[in-house]
Image 1 (cartoon, rainbow, N blue to C red):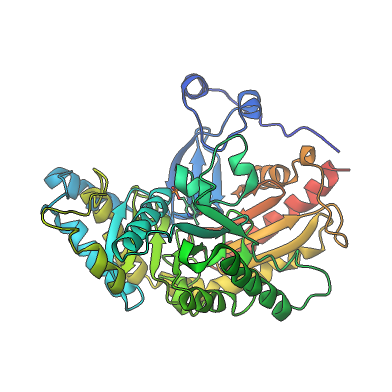
Image 2 (image 1 turned 90 degrees about the vertical axis):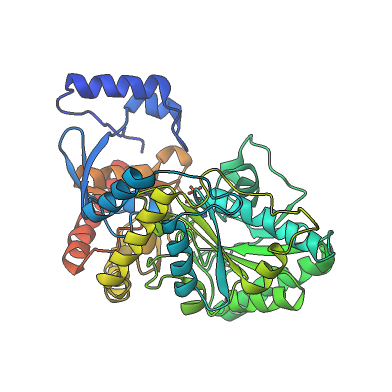
Length: 466
Ligand code: PLP
Protein backbone atom coordinates (compact mmCIF):
# COMPACT_ATOMS: atom_id res chain seq x y z
CA UNK A 1 0.00 0.00 0.00
CA UNK A 2 2.82 2.42 0.66
CA UNK A 3 4.83 2.79 -2.52
CA UNK A 4 7.15 5.74 -1.92
CA UNK A 5 6.44 9.13 -3.40
CA UNK A 6 9.70 9.97 -5.14
CA UNK A 7 10.64 13.49 -6.06
CA UNK A 8 13.95 12.93 -7.85
CA UNK A 9 14.84 15.83 -10.07
CA UNK A 10 16.54 15.15 -13.38
CA UNK A 11 19.47 17.53 -13.33
CA UNK A 12 20.46 19.12 -10.06
CA UNK A 13 22.12 22.30 -11.27
CA UNK A 14 24.50 23.94 -8.84
CA UNK A 15 22.35 27.04 -8.38
CA UNK A 16 19.33 25.02 -7.49
CA UNK A 17 21.36 22.84 -5.13
CA UNK A 18 22.69 25.89 -3.37
CA UNK A 19 19.23 27.44 -3.03
CA UNK A 20 17.80 24.22 -1.71
CA UNK A 21 20.59 24.01 0.84
CA UNK A 22 19.94 27.57 2.05
CA UNK A 23 16.24 26.90 2.21
CA UNK A 24 16.64 23.65 4.08
CA UNK A 25 19.08 25.13 6.57
CA UNK A 26 17.32 28.41 7.32
CA UNK A 27 13.73 28.76 6.10
CA UNK A 28 11.11 27.56 8.57
CA UNK A 29 8.27 26.75 6.18
CA UNK A 30 4.66 27.12 7.32
CA UNK A 31 2.53 23.98 7.62
CA UNK A 32 5.38 21.63 6.75
CA UNK A 33 6.32 18.13 7.85
CA UNK A 34 10.05 18.68 8.23
CA UNK A 35 10.89 14.99 8.31
CA UNK A 36 9.48 14.58 4.80
CA UNK A 37 10.73 17.96 3.66
CA UNK A 38 14.32 17.18 4.58
CA UNK A 39 14.08 13.81 2.93
CA UNK A 40 12.30 14.84 -0.26
CA UNK A 41 13.31 18.42 -0.87
CA UNK A 42 11.06 21.13 -2.11
CA UNK A 43 9.98 22.54 -5.42
CA UNK A 44 11.41 25.96 -6.10
CA UNK A 45 8.82 27.88 -8.06
CA UNK A 46 10.68 30.49 -10.05
CA UNK A 47 8.43 31.80 -12.81
CA UNK A 48 4.76 32.32 -13.57
CA UNK A 49 2.49 33.40 -16.36
CA UNK A 50 -1.31 33.42 -16.55
CA UNK A 51 -2.53 30.02 -15.40
CA UNK A 52 0.99 28.54 -15.25
CA UNK A 53 3.90 28.40 -12.84
CA UNK A 54 7.35 27.03 -13.59
CA UNK A 55 9.92 25.42 -11.30
CA UNK A 56 13.69 25.87 -11.22
CA UNK A 57 14.13 22.98 -13.65
CA UNK A 58 11.88 24.55 -16.24
CA UNK A 59 8.92 22.24 -15.61
CA UNK A 60 5.69 24.04 -16.36
CA UNK A 61 2.55 23.38 -14.36
CA UNK A 62 -1.05 24.48 -14.53
CA UNK A 63 -1.68 26.25 -11.24
CA UNK A 64 -4.72 24.51 -9.77
CA UNK A 65 -4.62 26.37 -6.45
CA UNK A 66 -4.11 30.03 -7.42
CA UNK A 67 -0.93 30.09 -5.34
CA UNK A 68 -2.90 29.49 -2.14
CA UNK A 69 -6.49 30.45 -3.03
CA UNK A 70 -5.29 33.92 -3.85
CA UNK A 71 -3.89 34.65 -7.33
CA UNK A 72 -7.40 35.28 -8.62
CA UNK A 73 -6.49 37.28 -11.75
CA UNK A 74 -3.68 34.88 -12.66
CA UNK A 75 0.07 35.25 -12.72
CA UNK A 76 2.42 37.68 -14.41
CA UNK A 77 0.10 40.67 -14.56
CA UNK A 78 2.60 43.33 -15.56
CA UNK A 79 0.13 46.13 -14.95
CA UNK A 80 -0.17 45.20 -11.27
CA UNK A 81 3.63 45.09 -11.05
CA UNK A 82 3.79 48.48 -12.74
CA UNK A 83 1.20 50.03 -10.42
CA UNK A 84 3.20 48.78 -7.45
CA UNK A 85 6.49 50.01 -8.89
CA UNK A 86 5.01 53.44 -9.66
CA UNK A 87 3.68 53.76 -6.14
CA UNK A 88 6.89 52.46 -4.55
CA UNK A 89 8.94 54.93 -6.54
CA UNK A 90 6.68 57.86 -5.81
CA UNK A 91 5.97 57.13 -2.13
CA UNK A 92 6.63 53.61 -0.88
CA UNK A 93 5.52 54.13 2.66
CA UNK A 94 4.30 56.63 5.17
CA UNK A 95 2.26 56.28 8.33
CA UNK A 96 -1.54 56.21 8.28
CA UNK A 97 -1.82 56.81 12.04
CA UNK A 98 -3.63 59.88 13.31
CA UNK A 99 -4.55 62.21 10.48
CA UNK A 100 -2.10 60.89 7.89
CA UNK A 101 -3.23 59.01 4.81
CA UNK A 102 -2.23 58.13 1.27
CA UNK A 103 -4.08 58.12 -2.03
CA UNK A 104 -4.24 54.35 -2.76
CA UNK A 105 -5.52 53.56 0.76
CA UNK A 106 -8.26 56.20 0.47
CA UNK A 107 -9.22 55.15 -3.08
CA UNK A 108 -9.31 51.48 -2.14
CA UNK A 109 -11.44 52.05 0.97
CA UNK A 110 -13.99 53.91 -1.16
CA UNK A 111 -13.91 51.19 -3.83
CA UNK A 112 -14.45 48.44 -1.23
CA UNK A 113 -17.38 50.38 0.23
CA UNK A 114 -18.86 50.63 -3.28
CA UNK A 115 -18.46 46.88 -3.96
CA UNK A 116 -19.53 45.58 -0.55
CA UNK A 117 -23.12 45.18 0.69
CA UNK A 118 -24.68 48.65 1.13
CA UNK A 119 -24.30 48.95 4.91
CA UNK A 120 -20.56 48.10 4.95
CA UNK A 121 -18.88 51.42 4.30
CA UNK A 122 -15.81 51.46 6.53
CA UNK A 123 -12.49 49.68 6.11
CA UNK A 124 -9.85 48.71 8.67
CA UNK A 125 -6.67 47.53 6.93
CA UNK A 126 -4.32 44.75 7.98
CA UNK A 127 -1.65 42.64 6.31
CA UNK A 128 -3.49 39.37 5.66
CA UNK A 129 -6.37 37.13 6.66
CA UNK A 130 -5.22 36.09 10.14
CA UNK A 131 -4.45 39.67 11.08
CA UNK A 132 -7.83 40.81 9.71
CA UNK A 133 -9.65 38.24 11.85
CA UNK A 134 -7.54 39.05 14.88
CA UNK A 135 -8.08 42.79 14.54
CA UNK A 136 -11.80 42.20 14.04
CA UNK A 137 -12.24 40.35 17.31
CA UNK A 138 -10.41 43.12 19.16
CA UNK A 139 -12.68 45.69 17.52
CA UNK A 140 -15.78 43.65 18.38
CA UNK A 141 -14.75 43.41 22.04
CA UNK A 142 -13.99 47.11 22.07
CA UNK A 143 -17.40 47.82 20.53
CA UNK A 144 -19.26 45.91 23.22
CA UNK A 145 -17.19 47.53 25.97
CA UNK A 146 -18.13 50.90 24.52
CA UNK A 147 -21.86 50.17 24.41
CA UNK A 148 -21.86 49.04 28.04
CA UNK A 149 -21.97 45.28 27.42
CA UNK A 150 -18.50 44.26 28.64
CA UNK A 151 -19.51 40.65 29.26
CA UNK A 152 -20.13 40.02 25.58
CA UNK A 153 -16.74 38.47 24.85
CA UNK A 154 -17.18 34.91 23.61
CA UNK A 155 -16.89 34.18 19.90
CA UNK A 156 -18.75 31.28 18.32
CA UNK A 157 -16.79 29.56 15.60
CA UNK A 158 -17.10 26.09 14.08
CA UNK A 159 -15.18 22.82 14.10
CA UNK A 160 -12.96 22.57 11.03
CA UNK A 161 -13.13 26.31 10.36
CA UNK A 162 -9.90 27.94 9.24
CA UNK A 163 -9.40 31.56 10.28
CA UNK A 164 -5.59 31.81 10.37
CA UNK A 165 -2.70 31.40 12.76
CA UNK A 166 -2.18 34.51 14.86
CA UNK A 167 -2.96 33.54 18.46
CA UNK A 168 -6.56 34.68 18.29
CA UNK A 169 -7.19 33.54 14.70
CA UNK A 170 -5.70 30.12 15.53
CA UNK A 171 -8.06 29.93 18.49
CA UNK A 172 -11.00 30.62 16.16
CA UNK A 173 -9.71 27.92 13.82
CA UNK A 174 -11.48 24.63 14.44
CA UNK A 175 -9.21 22.21 12.56
CA UNK A 176 -7.97 20.19 15.51
CA UNK A 177 -4.67 19.10 13.95
CA UNK A 178 -3.75 22.73 13.27
CA UNK A 179 -3.48 23.36 16.97
CA UNK A 180 -1.69 20.18 18.06
CA UNK A 181 0.64 21.19 20.90
CA UNK A 182 -0.17 24.84 20.40
CA UNK A 183 -2.11 26.74 23.05
CA UNK A 184 -5.39 28.42 22.24
CA UNK A 185 -7.50 31.07 23.93
CA UNK A 186 -10.27 28.68 24.91
CA UNK A 187 -11.97 31.10 27.28
CA UNK A 188 -12.80 33.30 24.28
CA UNK A 189 -14.02 30.75 21.74
CA UNK A 190 -16.71 28.06 21.55
CA UNK A 191 -16.81 25.80 18.52
CA UNK A 192 -20.09 24.59 17.07
CA UNK A 193 -20.44 21.67 14.65
CA UNK A 194 -19.38 22.34 11.09
CA UNK A 195 -21.96 21.91 8.34
CA UNK A 196 -20.80 18.75 6.60
CA UNK A 197 -23.45 17.40 4.26
CA UNK A 198 -21.33 14.45 3.16
CA UNK A 199 -20.80 13.22 6.70
CA UNK A 200 -24.15 14.21 8.22
CA UNK A 201 -25.98 11.52 10.17
CA UNK A 202 -27.26 8.79 7.88
CA UNK A 203 -30.87 9.06 6.75
CA UNK A 204 -31.10 12.71 7.78
CA UNK A 205 -32.46 15.02 5.08
CA UNK A 206 -30.61 18.21 4.21
CA UNK A 207 -33.45 20.26 5.71
CA UNK A 208 -33.45 18.29 8.98
CA UNK A 209 -29.67 18.58 9.13
CA UNK A 210 -29.95 22.34 8.75
CA UNK A 211 -32.56 22.43 11.54
CA UNK A 212 -30.22 20.48 13.82
CA UNK A 213 -27.33 22.93 13.22
CA UNK A 214 -29.53 25.93 13.89
CA UNK A 215 -30.86 24.24 17.05
CA UNK A 216 -27.31 23.66 18.21
CA UNK A 217 -26.65 27.39 17.89
CA UNK A 218 -29.80 28.21 19.84
CA UNK A 219 -28.94 25.71 22.58
CA UNK A 220 -25.40 27.05 22.81
CA UNK A 221 -26.67 30.60 23.22
CA UNK A 222 -29.09 29.38 25.87
CA UNK A 223 -26.27 27.61 27.71
CA UNK A 224 -23.63 30.35 27.58
CA UNK A 225 -26.04 33.25 27.66
CA UNK A 226 -26.47 35.82 24.91
CA UNK A 227 -25.08 38.42 27.32
CA UNK A 228 -21.72 36.64 27.16
CA UNK A 229 -21.49 36.14 23.39
CA UNK A 230 -20.08 38.81 21.11
CA UNK A 231 -20.08 37.28 17.65
CA UNK A 232 -20.39 34.30 15.37
CA UNK A 233 -17.72 33.92 12.68
CA UNK A 234 -18.09 31.72 9.59
CA UNK A 235 -16.60 31.19 6.16
CA UNK A 236 -19.48 31.21 3.62
CA UNK A 237 -17.99 27.97 2.28
CA UNK A 238 -15.52 26.38 4.64
CA UNK A 239 -12.22 26.26 2.76
CA UNK A 240 -9.18 24.56 4.29
CA UNK A 241 -11.50 22.49 6.50
CA UNK A 242 -12.64 20.59 3.41
CA UNK A 243 -14.58 22.92 1.10
CA UNK A 244 -17.80 22.30 2.98
CA UNK A 245 -20.92 23.83 1.46
CA UNK A 246 -23.59 24.34 4.12
CA UNK A 247 -27.18 23.18 3.63
CA UNK A 248 -29.53 25.49 1.82
CA UNK A 249 -30.58 28.43 3.96
CA UNK A 250 -28.07 27.68 6.73
CA UNK A 251 -26.23 31.01 6.80
CA UNK A 252 -29.36 33.16 6.65
CA UNK A 253 -30.93 31.18 9.47
CA UNK A 254 -27.78 31.32 11.59
CA UNK A 255 -27.65 35.06 11.06
CA UNK A 256 -31.30 35.48 12.05
CA UNK A 257 -30.64 33.66 15.36
CA UNK A 258 -27.56 35.82 15.96
CA UNK A 259 -29.48 38.99 15.24
CA UNK A 260 -32.29 38.02 17.60
CA UNK A 261 -29.67 37.61 20.34
CA UNK A 262 -27.59 40.74 19.71
CA UNK A 263 -24.70 38.61 18.44
CA UNK A 264 -22.65 40.07 15.57
CA UNK A 265 -22.29 38.03 12.40
CA UNK A 266 -18.77 38.02 10.91
CA UNK A 267 -18.25 36.54 7.44
CA UNK A 268 -14.68 35.43 6.79
CA UNK A 269 -14.53 35.94 3.03
CA UNK A 270 -10.76 35.63 2.82
CA UNK A 271 -11.21 32.83 0.25
CA UNK A 272 -14.73 33.39 -1.07
CA UNK A 273 -14.23 37.11 -1.73
CA UNK A 274 -13.07 38.70 -4.99
CA UNK A 275 -14.70 36.40 -7.47
CA UNK A 276 -14.09 32.82 -6.37
CA UNK A 277 -17.85 32.17 -6.21
CA UNK A 278 -18.67 34.54 -9.06
CA UNK A 279 -19.18 37.74 -7.05
CA UNK A 280 -16.94 40.23 -5.28
CA UNK A 281 -18.56 39.15 -2.03
CA UNK A 282 -20.49 35.91 -1.59
CA UNK A 283 -22.31 36.74 1.66
CA UNK A 284 -25.19 38.70 0.22
CA UNK A 285 -25.11 37.67 -3.44
CA UNK A 286 -24.90 33.91 -2.86
CA UNK A 287 -25.93 33.26 0.74
CA UNK A 288 -28.49 35.97 1.38
CA UNK A 289 -26.80 37.26 4.53
CA UNK A 290 -25.98 40.81 5.60
CA UNK A 291 -22.97 40.38 7.87
CA UNK A 292 -22.06 43.10 10.36
CA UNK A 293 -18.46 42.58 9.33
CA UNK A 294 -16.80 40.98 6.28
CA UNK A 295 -13.12 40.11 6.32
CA UNK A 296 -11.09 39.84 3.14
CA UNK A 297 -7.46 39.23 2.12
CA UNK A 298 -5.95 36.92 -0.55
CA UNK A 299 -7.95 37.79 -3.72
CA UNK A 300 -8.15 41.42 -2.60
CA UNK A 301 -4.69 41.91 -4.07
CA UNK A 302 -4.58 38.56 -5.93
CA UNK A 303 -1.54 37.82 -3.77
CA UNK A 304 0.62 40.41 -5.53
CA UNK A 305 1.14 42.14 -2.17
CA UNK A 306 0.18 41.26 1.41
CA UNK A 307 -3.11 42.89 2.35
CA UNK A 308 -6.18 42.23 4.45
CA UNK A 309 -9.23 44.30 5.28
CA UNK A 310 -12.12 44.32 7.72
CA UNK A 311 -15.28 45.85 6.27
CA UNK A 312 -17.40 47.35 9.01
CA UNK A 313 -21.06 48.39 9.12
CA UNK A 314 -22.18 51.97 9.58
CA UNK A 315 -23.76 51.02 12.90
CA UNK A 316 -20.52 49.64 14.36
CA UNK A 317 -18.45 52.45 12.89
CA UNK A 318 -20.54 55.04 14.68
CA UNK A 319 -19.43 53.57 18.01
CA UNK A 320 -15.83 52.79 16.98
CA UNK A 321 -15.32 56.32 15.71
CA UNK A 322 -16.58 58.08 18.84
CA UNK A 323 -13.68 58.93 21.17
CA UNK A 324 -13.79 57.37 24.65
CA UNK A 325 -13.40 60.86 26.08
CA UNK A 326 -11.17 63.89 25.62
CA UNK A 327 -7.93 62.73 23.96
CA UNK A 328 -9.33 59.25 23.32
CA UNK A 329 -8.29 57.42 20.16
CA UNK A 330 -9.06 54.09 18.54
CA UNK A 331 -5.70 52.75 19.63
CA UNK A 332 -5.25 49.76 17.38
CA UNK A 333 -3.64 49.33 13.95
CA UNK A 334 -0.46 48.29 12.23
CA UNK A 335 2.56 50.10 10.82
CA UNK A 336 1.42 48.77 7.47
CA UNK A 337 -2.32 49.51 7.78
CA UNK A 338 -3.23 50.91 4.37
CA UNK A 339 0.22 50.26 2.92
CA UNK A 340 0.27 52.33 -0.29
CA UNK A 341 2.03 49.70 -2.44
CA UNK A 342 -0.35 46.92 -1.36
CA UNK A 343 -3.37 49.19 -1.86
CA UNK A 344 -2.11 50.17 -5.32
CA UNK A 345 -1.85 46.46 -6.18
CA UNK A 346 -5.41 45.86 -4.92
CA UNK A 347 -6.84 48.78 -6.89
CA UNK A 348 -5.28 47.52 -10.13
CA UNK A 349 -6.40 43.96 -9.30
CA UNK A 350 -10.01 45.10 -8.85
CA UNK A 351 -9.79 47.11 -12.07
CA UNK A 352 -8.72 43.92 -13.91
CA UNK A 353 -11.49 41.82 -12.34
CA UNK A 354 -14.07 44.39 -13.49
CA UNK A 355 -12.56 45.12 -16.91
CA UNK A 356 -12.16 41.47 -17.89
CA UNK A 357 -15.48 40.34 -16.46
CA UNK A 358 -13.71 37.77 -14.28
CA UNK A 359 -16.76 37.26 -12.04
CA UNK A 360 -18.75 36.51 -15.21
CA UNK A 361 -16.15 33.94 -16.22
CA UNK A 362 -16.45 32.24 -12.83
CA UNK A 363 -20.24 32.18 -13.09
CA UNK A 364 -19.96 30.70 -16.60
CA UNK A 365 -16.99 28.33 -16.25
CA UNK A 366 -17.45 27.41 -12.55
CA UNK A 367 -20.51 25.19 -13.02
CA UNK A 368 -18.75 23.51 -15.97
CA UNK A 369 -15.71 22.81 -13.77
CA UNK A 370 -18.01 21.37 -11.08
CA UNK A 371 -19.83 19.16 -13.59
CA UNK A 372 -16.64 17.89 -15.23
CA UNK A 373 -14.91 17.23 -11.91
CA UNK A 374 -17.89 15.19 -10.73
CA UNK A 375 -17.35 12.79 -13.65
CA UNK A 376 -14.36 11.50 -11.62
CA UNK A 377 -16.61 10.15 -8.88
CA UNK A 378 -16.28 6.59 -10.21
CA UNK A 379 -12.63 6.31 -9.10
CA UNK A 380 -11.98 3.77 -6.37
CA UNK A 381 -10.71 6.26 -3.79
CA UNK A 382 -13.15 9.08 -4.46
CA UNK A 383 -15.82 9.42 -1.77
CA UNK A 384 -17.10 12.89 -2.53
CA UNK A 385 -16.52 15.73 -4.96
CA UNK A 386 -17.95 19.00 -3.75
CA UNK A 387 -17.72 22.74 -3.64
CA UNK A 388 -18.91 25.54 -5.82
CA UNK A 389 -17.56 27.42 -8.83
CA UNK A 390 -13.78 27.85 -8.44
CA UNK A 391 -13.65 26.39 -4.92
CA UNK A 392 -13.72 22.60 -5.12
CA UNK A 393 -12.47 19.52 -3.38
CA UNK A 394 -12.10 15.76 -3.75
CA UNK A 395 -12.52 13.71 -0.57
CA UNK A 396 -10.61 10.42 -0.79
CA UNK A 397 -11.84 7.41 1.19
CA UNK A 398 -11.03 3.74 1.70
CA UNK A 399 -14.65 2.68 1.31
CA UNK A 400 -17.33 4.60 -0.54
CA UNK A 401 -20.20 3.04 1.39
CA UNK A 402 -18.93 3.37 4.94
CA UNK A 403 -16.96 6.54 4.04
CA UNK A 404 -14.09 5.13 6.14
CA UNK A 405 -10.80 6.89 5.59
CA UNK A 406 -7.55 5.35 4.44
CA UNK A 407 -4.82 5.17 7.09
CA UNK A 408 -2.91 8.45 7.47
CA UNK A 409 0.29 6.65 6.40
CA UNK A 410 -1.22 6.02 2.96
CA UNK A 411 -0.96 9.80 2.41
CA UNK A 412 -3.59 9.58 -0.25
CA UNK A 413 -3.95 13.33 -0.72
CA UNK A 414 -0.19 13.66 -1.23
CA UNK A 415 -0.26 10.79 -3.72
CA UNK A 416 -2.98 12.27 -5.88
CA UNK A 417 -1.23 15.65 -5.81
CA UNK A 418 2.08 14.03 -6.68
CA UNK A 419 0.60 12.14 -9.63
CA UNK A 420 -1.05 15.32 -10.86
CA UNK A 421 2.20 17.26 -10.58
CA UNK A 422 4.02 14.59 -12.58
CA UNK A 423 1.43 15.29 -15.29
CA UNK A 424 1.74 19.06 -15.16
CA UNK A 425 -0.89 20.18 -12.65
CA UNK A 426 -0.50 21.48 -9.11
CA UNK A 427 -3.41 20.79 -6.74
CA UNK A 428 -3.34 20.97 -2.97
CA UNK A 429 -3.28 17.98 -0.65
CA UNK A 430 -4.79 18.53 2.81
CA UNK A 431 -4.72 15.18 4.60
CA UNK A 432 -7.04 12.89 2.67
CA UNK A 433 -8.45 15.78 0.64
CA UNK A 434 -7.36 17.38 -2.61
CA UNK A 435 -8.33 20.98 -3.16
CA UNK A 436 -8.82 22.64 -6.53
CA UNK A 437 -9.01 26.45 -6.24
CA UNK A 438 -7.60 27.85 -9.49
CA UNK A 439 -6.97 31.32 -10.80
CA UNK A 440 -10.33 32.67 -11.95
CA UNK A 441 -9.23 32.83 -15.59
CA UNK A 442 -9.51 29.14 -16.45
CA UNK A 443 -11.67 28.51 -19.51
CA UNK A 444 -13.42 25.33 -20.63
CA UNK A 445 -10.35 24.06 -22.54
CA UNK A 446 -8.21 24.32 -19.42
CA UNK A 447 -10.92 22.60 -17.38
CA UNK A 448 -10.94 19.70 -19.86
CA UNK A 449 -7.15 19.34 -19.67
CA UNK A 450 -7.23 19.46 -15.87
CA UNK A 451 -9.97 16.85 -15.60
CA UNK A 452 -8.03 14.53 -17.96
CA UNK A 453 -4.95 14.90 -15.76
CA UNK A 454 -6.93 14.24 -12.60
CA UNK A 455 -8.56 11.22 -14.19
CA UNK A 456 -5.13 9.69 -14.88
CA UNK A 457 -3.80 10.78 -11.48
CA UNK A 458 -6.63 9.15 -9.54
CA UNK A 459 -6.23 5.94 -11.53
CA UNK A 460 -2.46 5.93 -10.89
CA UNK A 461 -3.06 6.59 -7.19
CA UNK A 462 -5.36 3.60 -6.90
CA UNK A 463 -2.61 1.47 -8.47
CA UNK A 464 0.09 2.66 -6.04
CA UNK A 465 -2.20 1.95 -3.09
CA UNK A 466 -2.70 -1.69 -4.05
N1 PLP B 1 -9.43 32.97 6.73
C1 PLP B 1 -9.59 32.04 5.79
C2 PLP B 1 -10.97 31.59 5.41
C3 PLP B 1 -8.47 31.47 5.18
O1 PLP B 1 -8.63 30.49 4.26
C4 PLP B 1 -7.19 31.94 5.53
C5 PLP B 1 -6.00 31.38 4.89
O2 PLP B 1 -6.03 30.43 4.16
C6 PLP B 1 -7.08 32.91 6.54
C7 PLP B 1 -8.22 33.41 7.10
C8 PLP B 1 -5.74 33.38 6.99
O3 PLP B 1 -5.18 34.22 6.06
P1 PLP B 1 -3.61 34.53 6.07
O4 PLP B 1 -2.92 33.25 5.76
O5 PLP B 1 -3.48 35.59 5.00
O6 PLP B 1 -3.26 35.05 7.40
